[in-house]
Image (tube, rainbow, N blue to C red; front, side):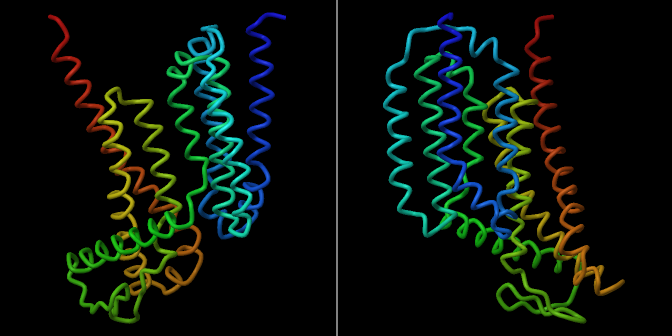
Length: 290
């Protein structure tokens, strides 16, 4: 059997081992209905990453260097992290987070060991993209939600003022004509924000060339998500007050409304992408000879 085939077989076995390291903790986490709302994107991340690796397979796997021994130390670090992570089983989210991260470290180490630095460099995007499959640690998730709630509350405050709506505010509670609304944790939009962030990273990779513009697009997700959250809160209030309370009490609020305002977020993100892409095209034309 050729050396490249042997490497491919060994890499497949090590990949299966990495999946095994993360499978049980992730499965248990995703079975939790509350956590599923946060992490429904996780199963898609490896699929997208595998697509990009397959797309560039000739560039990535066309090189056949000798073994890159530092990869073994990275694999060992992943295995140690997995062992240490067993102490977090009382917290399913953090246990799954460390287990998945350790599996990713192990897999990256095996890739580096078998295919070398040059192949690793060519596979940087799909390899780095896999970090999005790691559940967010509890402390970071809670902090992120708190920031989103606070920022969404401020934007809601500005929007109500902009449309001339009379109200009084007590923290995150708005006392309005007809009834009061509270910007609670459930209004953080963390799920749609993660989806927008992933979309922004993919769009930047596919349509932009300069790294700093890819970063701008990814970071633009946060103001877009916050504005979209404020718009959703104000929009739901106006619909409920002027048309029917079921807009804020029924399925539109809890199920369908999220998709509508997520679409608005996508449009805004698409507009920013268009502006960044157009500037790149103009710059390319400006430096083109003749």
